[in-house]
Amino acid sequence: MAAKDRIGKASEAVRSSDYIKRLIEDEQLRENLLAAYGSARSAYGRMSNGKPAGKALLEDRKLQRELSEAARALRDASFAIRQPAAKPKRKGGLGRTLMLLIVGAVLALALSESLRSKVLDLLFGAEEEFDYSSTTMPAQDVPAPVDVPAA
Image (cartoon, rainbow, N blue to C red; front, side, top):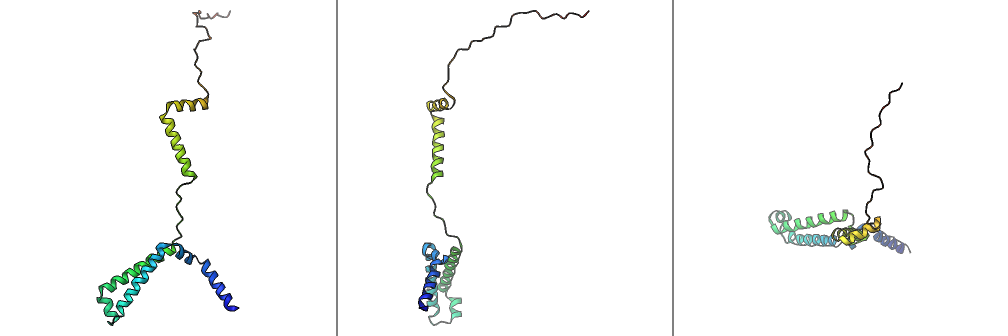
């Protein structure tokens, strides 16, 4: 019974681990780890071919290149695992649709005079054509009042 409890706790820890989730979801991280493993394995094979390790490290250019590739892939993998998971990019949404609708409406109003006049009529009412006639009489020549001196 104790073994089942330990296995259950271990599997729960694996399921809740963010690193394991990232490893499962992130293809680039998996590729970096596989490249590092492949380069390190190849380098180990070249080092264990019978030459002393120090001599192989100093003289074997291919071994140096493989170790460098393994180090680069491990660095990339460690950088990728420390970064937060990339959020999937949204391709559309309400904001983009609204923006396209507004831009289209502005262009339609700018390019169509009949549409522009209909919108102005809806907003401010239809224009009334009228003839202007003044209701005031034109000023007549009236003499200015004369000041009368006080007695």
